[in-house]
Length: 59
Image (cartoon, rainbow, N blue to C red):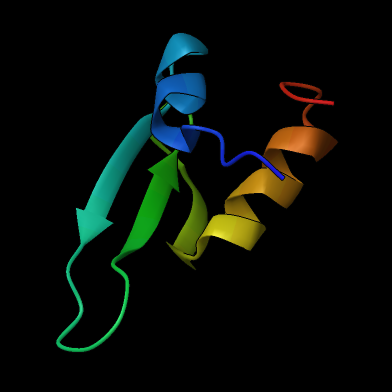
């Protein structure tokens, strides 16, 4: 399975991604909609890809 660049996809559709560094492990991220409302909080890669699929941004 090829990893996709979720940040690039979010930004292409007008969303903002805020990266949150963690002391251990991969960073988590907050994703904000084009209207500035928080869509996903403390997201990991799988949560982001699920949301992108639900919104129809990826297959």
